[in-house]
Length: 128
Image (cartoon, rainbow, N blue to C red):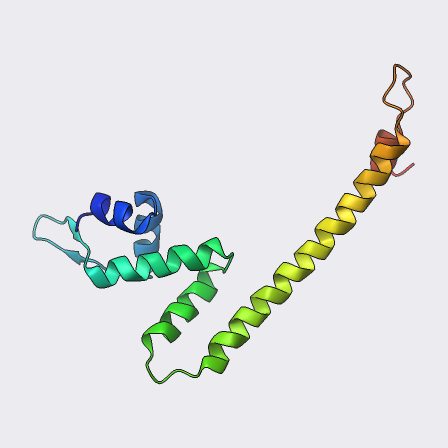
């Protein structure tokens, strides 16, 4: 498969596929004229990477997960450890976003939003 065909097959942009090749996540064969020739195995890897990235795994996590996926002697505990770590990161980010939401909600509630120049939102942002 050429890059256009593989992009359509796995649902990733060609630019992303080229990047994954550049960083060594996939290594398609090259024809004599230099064109990429992707295999079904490459398509499967790219679909795997697309799903992992859509869940927010980092490139390095994806590299490790892909390596574990290909290792038939892997321990599922290794995979679970990575997923748990990522889940903890997501939960921390959610907490941070909720705190941001509460702070902004308070500022918005305090602002009258009228023609007067005083604005609790700007005061809050400036630290006053």
